[in-house]
Length: 299
Image 1: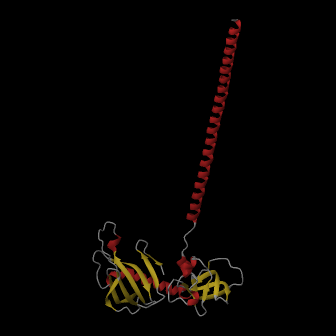
Image 2: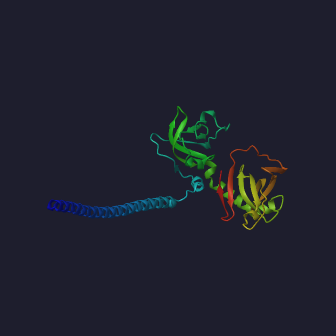
Image 3: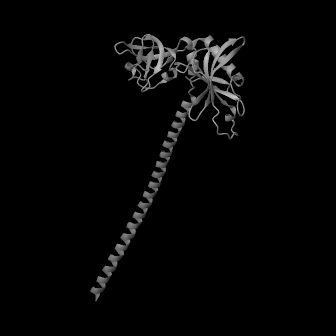
């Protein structure tokens, strides 16, 4: 009987030991889990903070880049051209030479481009013509179709030049010619409503562009100023065009309309006169800003 009681007592002791051991393990596991959880939270918090800092730094850098770009002044290429200032294109190594002519852009399928230059983007048309070695569109675009001087390294065997800098020359920098042209354009804007063959149907005529063939002959594109009125509900294209011959007369000009066009379905339709300069090349165009009351060279 005593042996049986001893056996039961031993079983009870084992059970108590197992329970106690399990309790100790649970306490240790809970503590470790709590510690890991806190560590993970701290790690996540630190990671989020790092990510936020990285994002903020990226934003700051982006803002800085935008600020840097916005701080860059817009270049006034017309003023640079008219003042005959050298404009840097790229650094070139070698002996520099200067050549002059008209800078042409190469357009696919343009029959006017000499065959030897069709694989280039630009070439200089002159007494001695050269391909421009630059293989990408650059600031040279702003000097297209203008009389220029190019300074760079010549490769006579390829008839090409690697451009270092460029400046306008000839009529492009003639101060008297520029001043006379501006006066003539201002006169046309001030008197367009009395020069045109027909009155404006709604409000008054205002000039959009003037395209010079030479110093006395030019095309004028104009439209009814009502189109600039935000409250206007007309859906008509009021554009018109005239070819004008103007000669100096005292402090003003004698302006004779040689041809007159009205806008058709797709393009201008000649209504009066003859377009004697329809095959003209190397014209010079200016656009008028009615708000600023100023002219900008556009071609």
